[in-house]
Length: 229
Length: 92
Image (cartoon, rainbow over all chains, first blue to last red; front, side):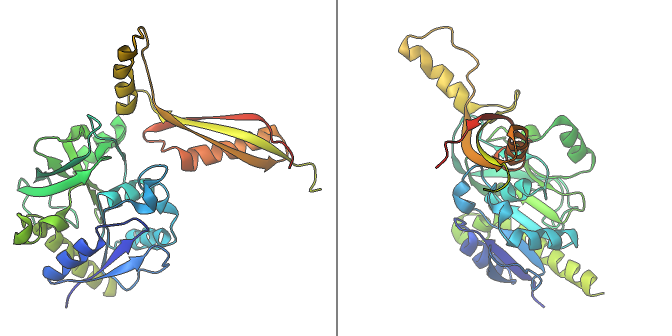
């Protein structure tokens, strides 16, 4: 049985086909979900891919939170379904209140398009469940607003509860505590700035992102089974 | 005529919270000496929004404008906002 992944597309999303191709390559099923859709119940997991949802008008992710599909995404997440936001998808999840913190402009006011090393900090999330903590992965980043920030109280909570799932080895964008990815309290909603789908085929120079996406496919089936039982 | 409602003009200003790095403001500030200007510090970049609200009175317009500012226009994690009713919109 292959996990079925819904890839949520807003006007301005531009990484949806990269994600679908990566999921197919790793043995999962994937299809597009339009932002105007109101149901995501056909899927075992959801990915909000990168891009510029609604043109990034106002702030990245700020308008996407009002798209009809987001109510269904919130319910899917509340029911324990795995949800992963990549880059702009991470920004959408923070704006929608499904993840804490915010992504501000990179330190140095520079758009970053490069490959970075990130360290997996915990295997207790839907995106890192099959990866040993301490593993360093080489994955591309491609963002202007990737500088994760939150208040001191939230940061202490994220650290205490082991909710920082990825840290940059060399902080490229000024993110607080070097944070590249976080999860919610229930550990089924994850946001990260690096693009694992762009490191899932030898042609792209690294297959390290595949470890993360394979974890998600495993988590998707586990969550589905729990749901059915 | 719908009751005694009037149209109020509202101005919302949004800027990054103190302590949040403002690379735009810092970059602008660093550029100013090139004009020969001295003594300018604390530059903060932000956004402003203007819109009209139909409301019973100025206080109601301010209250609605504040909801728009705090729930949509600003992200409270990194931004703060101020709301001003600038006057009554010209009837038209």
